[in-house]
Image (tube, rainbow, N blue to C red):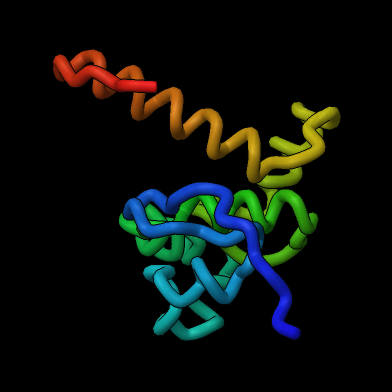
Length: 122
């Protein structure tokens, strides 16, 4: 019997995201066609990889995955390994980066919507 998956939200592009199923959001990632050496670069080359992330529709999911799974290498969600380590040190009590980042995104969308005169219904 196939395993049932629970829909937990939408990606930045508005498409539904299932749990932390990397295959679901990874197929929509801007970097899916990039060469691995572009994403696992060092020094100034990391800034080029971060540009790829800047326009990615699943940046939040990617970053949450890297933080929740303590991925040590590469650019994930627009952050270097050094930036992710610093964030993890600053917020040691976070148990789910996925929930935290999605809540922050929803709040941002609510505030931006209110600034543009949009009303949200519960």
